[in-house]
Length: 381
Image (cartoon, rainbow, N blue to C red; front, side, top):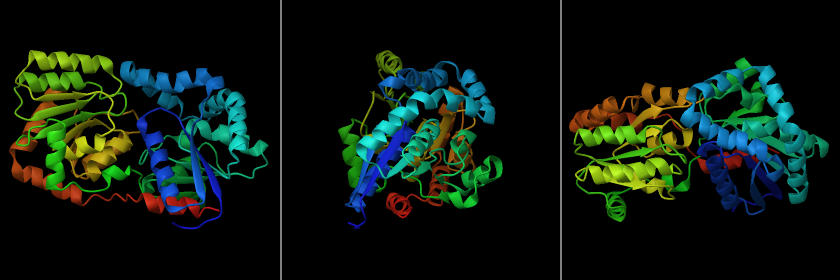
């Protein structure tokens, strides 16, 4: 372990998509594994006194994406405006900054890292009232097309995953270049080690997957993949020769409907899961993944060298994720279930085509190094 003076970090997150909290957890583990005098606390930035904000940002976020994506698009476009950002800040700060100030004082933190833009202004306010003795930085978890709301505050340190995100922040948001560092992408340790043939056989037997069939994974984070039922139904109607596994997360309706579909189509090799703690095993077991374009899931799939079909993405902020996969010839953006089925069939029936995609996956310009990110953050004195 690296010796360092005592540092007490508080990582702030919200449950709006899994990318925020997963990145925070990965960085926490990397810091505590490498620095024996550093400690990290994770904190959901909205406590009980902010239950209305928690409901709006977390439950409202999921509801908008699932039931009213058009409304989310309008909100996203409005949030690009400085006026809208300032208005949200005035609503959030009065209660949130007070609760954060209390937590910062209680834990005696030396450093605060925000993993969600909605919490950054409140953290700035809380730190100001504590005498500006706490270092504040922001980890921008949208790797390529980060919403301007991430960069509302000007005088703090930002960490981004790509040069594109840095350039946009400097050019479009007026952030000084020296206040933005490009750092490696953060993904869980379980995804970092490649899967050898023996481990693959163990995973397939463990989860009941046939060892002699291609396997397609459908996943979309904690809330499941929107449209998963329609995609699986299309595969069932066309008597798919490959196996399917679907991770529904907290989406109980889709979980129950897929269980019924499995009964209606007994010849379909379908495996249905709810919320899982072994996503790494499912990704390593699959031969192709159909996903929502969330940054964590996308990078986990691509780093595991699996072709990816993106069936949906969040307006604006996940567009860069889609472009990254498509432009590097290792993924496709396909929305219609029939077209998704046809692409999977094409991929699995043409070995040369599949090998070409594998070659593209090997050349992806992705830097993933959790320890390096921890070192960069620790050197920020």
